[in-house]
Amino acid sequence: MNLEELKSALWEAAQLLRGSIDAGGYKEYIFPLVFFKRICDVHKEEYERALAETGDEDFARNAPENYTFAIPEGCDWEDVRNVTTNVGQALTTAWVRIEQANPSRIVGGRRVEGLEGIFGNSGIWRNKNILTDETITGLIENFSKLDLSIKACPADEMGKAYEHLVGKFADDAGNTAQEFYTNRTVVELMVDILEPKAQESIYDPTCGTGGMLISCIAKLKNPGNPNDNSWREVRAYGQELKPLTATIARMNLFLHGLEEFRIVKDDTLVHPAFTTGGKLQTFDVVLANPPYGLGQDLWSQAAFEHDPYGRNFLGTPPASRADYAFIQHILKSMDEKTGRCAILLPLGDLDRESETKIRENLVKSDLLEAVIGLGPNLFYNSPMEACIMICRSKKTAAAKGHVLFINAVKEVTRKNGESYLERGHIQKIIDAYRKRHSDGTFSYDATNAEIAAINYNLNISRYAHQSIVETGSKVSLADAFAGWQESDSTVAGALDEILDAVR
Image (cartoon, rainbow, N blue to C red):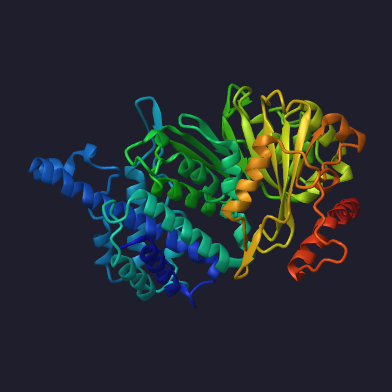
C-alpha cells in the first residue's frame, strides 16, 4: 500500500462514524484505533523477525528485548476483533493493560516515553447510546484490512498518513481546528528559519498535536541516507492544555519514530511542566502557535504579575489578553546561548497601545530579531492576517540593535478554499531574512532607535510597505482585498483597544 492509498483508507474508515457523532469528535475515536492497530502489527512483525533469526519460539515470544512495546496476552488486535458483544469494553480493557505494561523508563541515561494514558478517555467506547457494538465492529473490520507493520508502512509513511488525518479532521471540524492544528506551510517556514540541529532540544509550550515538533524532526532527516539516524538524538518537549490533543501529540511522535520526548497535559501559564531548580528549563529551539486573545476568565493576570519564574520580566499584560504572557514564557524558555524561537501571532500583538511598554522592553532587551507579516486566511476558519516573531538569545553582530521587518502579505496562494505558502514564497522570505534585505518595500532592517521614534509600534507596514494597487493598474479582486486587509491592520488594532477598554 502506497502513501496515497493509506491516506484514503484511513479517511474511509473514519467515515463510518458519520451519523453517530459530529465531525469534530472523529479524532477521539479514530486516532486511538490507528495507534492500536499500528503497535499490534509492529509487535507481530517483531515476533516473526525474532523467530526467523533464532528459531526459538519461547525466546521469540517472551524476550522483552525483541519488542518496541509489550502487548499482554489477550490484548492483541485479533483478540479484540474476535469479541462480538460489549466490544467497547473489551477494547478499553486491552488498552488499559497495554498502558500498564509499557511505563516510561530510563534507558542509558535517556528517558524513553511510556504509554501511560495514551488511549485517552475509555468511557466513550462503553457508551452504546453513542457507538453500538455493530459500529465499533465495523470500524475494527475496516482497519483490519490495513497492514500497518513497519515493512508495509515505514515510520515516515505512517507519520505522514497520520498528519494527513490530522489535517483532514481539521478541515472537517471547522472552527475547532485551530485548537490542534497549525497550517503546515507556515510551520515549514518557521522551522526553516530556526534550523534545528541533531542533539538539540526542541520545545513547544502549546503543542497541539505536535506538528511543530514533528516538522523539526522531519527537517533533520536525510532522504539521501535513510541510515542516518542522527535525528533520533533530538529531545522534544511539549505541553498542551487539552487532554485529547495532548494524547494525539504523543501518538503522533511515536508514529514518527521518536523515542526521547515528553508531552505533558497542563496549563503552561499556570503550571509550566518543565522546570529545574525552581527555574524554567531552557531549550535550544522553541516554536509555538499560542492561543490568542485569552480573556481574564481564561488566565490570571494577578498570578502572572507575581510569577515565581520571572516570566513577567518585560511587564504584565492587560487582563483582557494573555498573548504577551505566552511570549514572555517562550523568551524565558530559550537557552541563554543557543536559544532561538519562532512564535505565530495575530497582527494585533504588534501595535496595541495597552502593550506599548512591554514592546518597548522587548526591543530594548535586543532579543527580537525579526517580525514577518503573513497573508490572510492562514489561521483555520479565520480571515485574519498573522505574523511570526523571531527572537534569539544571542543575535549576530549585524542584527544587534536592529529588528528586521518582512512584509510577506502577498506571499500566499489560495486554491480550493485553502490558503498556503508555496515553496517559492517560503524561499523568498528566507532569503530576505538571511541576507537582512532592506528595500523598504518587502523588508526593512530598522534600528531600535527608529522603532523608539514611533513609540515602539511594531506594525510591519510602518517599516516595509507593499503597494498593491497602483495608479492606472488593473488588479484582481483577491489582490485588492489583500491590499485592503493590509491597510486595515491599524484600524483593527484600534478596535482591539476599544474592546479591551469596555471588557
